[in-house]
Length: 259
Image (cartoon, rainbow, N blue to C red):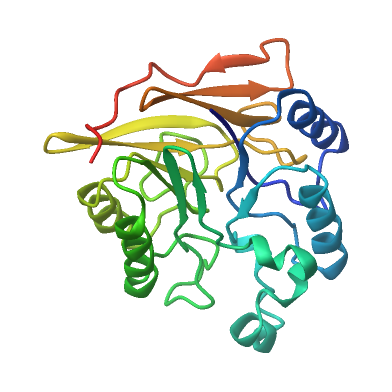
């Protein structure tokens, strides 16, 4: 099986060449699903959601969308941010935080955004108790023996990239997810790919971050992740719009034994 993990497309500051390249990869290779880990838009404007939603729906494969901090209405629109933050997604709203059950693998959402925080920078991550419990319930309902991938926008812990997430309650959430049998936590936000194994006792969970298909580049060229799954194991490749189009992000570490 093959999954494409894409993030931080930022319609409004998108890179058209990168979008066309990704869409062509989907057409040519027919991944089993696309996991979009947030920041579909730049300013959460209606026209950005319209363009981003149409692009995702045009891919023709199952898609799940996580919400990024850029996808929430900004501070100057507090009523919409607090009471109807997803309304502008339009037809793509049905893809938001959608659990995907595929043969041998379950992909479940984890909300890492907050409509308000007790700190000045609301762009950083936050995992609430309710959000974590909802994800843990979805994991418990997954078919026994499946690989479990959790998808959220912010890395739960730092992945060694230039950008940071500073996710509140991220350490505790990652341990709880590992205890529940999660094999990988997929995220975006930092605009550079990474693959970081984290071990709790005898269990290793992988923190996997995707790059960006926007013009807001940091240390990497436009990129998405290809996750290859076979025989209960998986590897992550960074696919980049560059002379080095496909390469492992890091030495692949084995996850914990299947539940």
